[in-house]
Length: 136
Image (tube, rainbow, N blue to C red; front, side, top):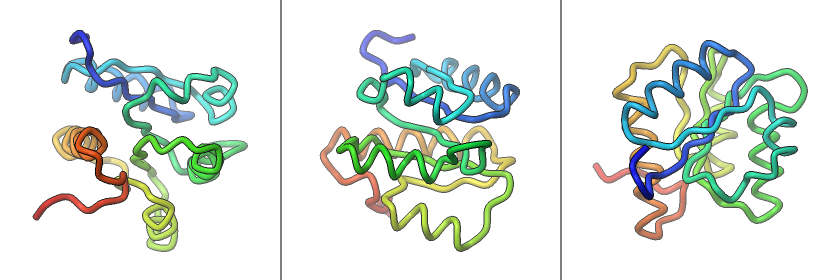
């Protein structure tokens, strides 16, 4: 990991997704933490260390959208990228209205994912709200 590199937290119940995204993010120079559930992430208490959260929308127990609501209500404004293999327009609209930086349907390509992470972190570093649209 690059000294001072941004840390991306991945919360997904699928081990293969966590491993794949972890490898991809590390290869791009990011620090990575992974969690298998919203509860595991909340129990860790590591909310403030993340530069970006990648949350699976559909997980057993508390889903990614609910986790985002909990964090937002607690005053954490870390940018969130939602990923899902079972998304629909209503879900995407709910996520974006809640301030998501992006909403990606699985499978997505590495370039698209890394660009979404980079843009989410860059907007925060320059002081824009996480839900701001990327420049055209």
